[in-house]
Image (cartoon, rainbow, N blue to C red; front, side, top):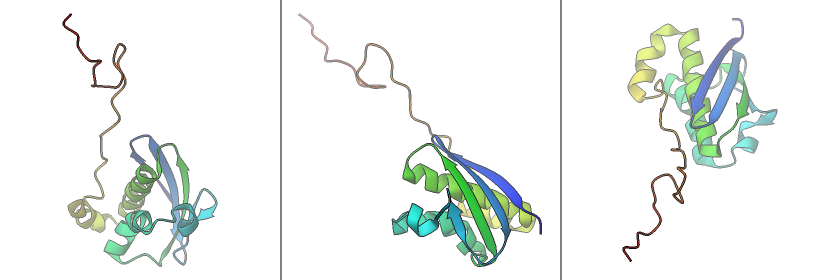
Length: 128
């Protein structure tokens, strides 16, 4: 198997991954998964597509992460892994889609408008 690359995005986070056959090592920005995401919940989010298909120990994954916060980065990696697994094995698409891992979450932060303290919050109105 040659190296399969894929892209995942969430909010402003972008994850570019490279999947190859291996022993299940996940490297994010030249650091181990447990070192980059010390929180167990975020590690679980990253591993969800691999655990669903039962292939967590069959592939080595190298990730380049950029932008966003840690939660958005973890979800971007999850989408990229799911897309790469579909490239490797197209029959797994229905299972991943049913679990909700193939959908790119389109929600972004709304921009701040001039004359307001935040995107939707207004300054207090004074009648007199």
